[in-house]
Every structure is written in C-alpha cells, then in structure tokens.
Length: 197
Image (tube, rainbow, N blue to C red):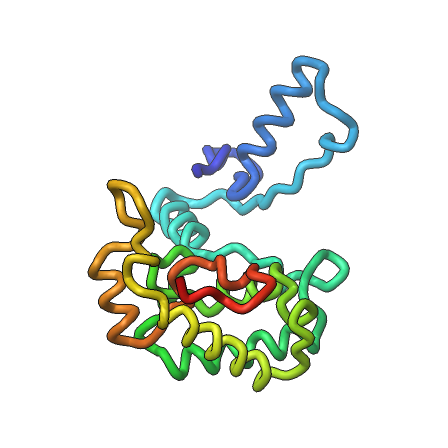
C-alpha cells in the first residue's frame, strides 16, 4: 500500500484504509454507496518525509493480523479459560518440538506456527468436541494424535497422482523430528480416531 496526501500544506495522510476509502469514494460518485458502508475506518498520520513513510510501511507490513482466537469472546474469540488451555498446550508442544515451530504464520509443512495452531484449535472447537478441560488433557490428545499420524506410511502422506502432496524432504524432516501435526490439519477436524492410513 501507499499513502495518500502528505504533500506540502496537507493536514495528514492515510496510512491504512486507503483502498477502503477509495472504494467508498467510487461507490459514492456512482450513487451506489450503501448507508452501512458510508463510514470507513482509516488511520491518518501527520505528514512525513519519504524515509519515514518507507519505515512506517515496512513496520505495518511486518505486523501479523489478529487471529480469531485472540478476539473478544463476543466477536468469536476464545473465552479466558479456553484461551489459557489452548495457549499452554501450544506452548508445551513448541517446547517439545522446537525445530518444528516457525515464527511466520504462513510457514510450510511440516512446520507449525504457535499462534496459527492456537487459532486452528479454537476454530475447530476441539475442547468442546473432545470434552477437554485442561491443557494437560489437550497436550495428551495432541501427542496421541501425533503418534497416530506417525504410524501412517509415507505413501499415505504422498497421496496419489503425478504431484506428491508432500515431498520426501518434508516427510524425512517430520520422521526425523517425530512431529506430524504440521502435515495438514485434517486431523483437527476428524470426529473419530485419526487414521494411520
């Protein structure tokens, strides 16, 4: 993104929300702006030099979005108890398998990101579906699931077809580290026991 305004004599510049603001302007000029879209949230900053603008946008682009689990409960986030259980369990897994956790939320298999895992555990309503009431129970369930996934032969991970689902290098790292939860999240949504096939 870029900043709008900021020239000599301007009162400020839009540093976030410029696309929303532009879309609202286009819709308004065509007489198609719905009343519920008439208010647009933007962030405005004092005018600044090019170097400061670059630094600001570099900082903005490094920020990870807030995940659902971390939103207030009335907005779909986890309650205090659920958040504590999920966070403690995810941190416990990261401590047991440090090489398999990466800082980026968009890391590649066989890795996981602790915040992405927390979010997925919440979205799957795992605590409710499995009647889990403590982080120790959740860790035990995650480790048991990991063991079931470890029993799956490599052919089961590769899939069928000309392009394997997971490369030999990915599977080798998962086997070497003994961690399979980063090979997709189907296990998280399975209702029964995780298949080893």
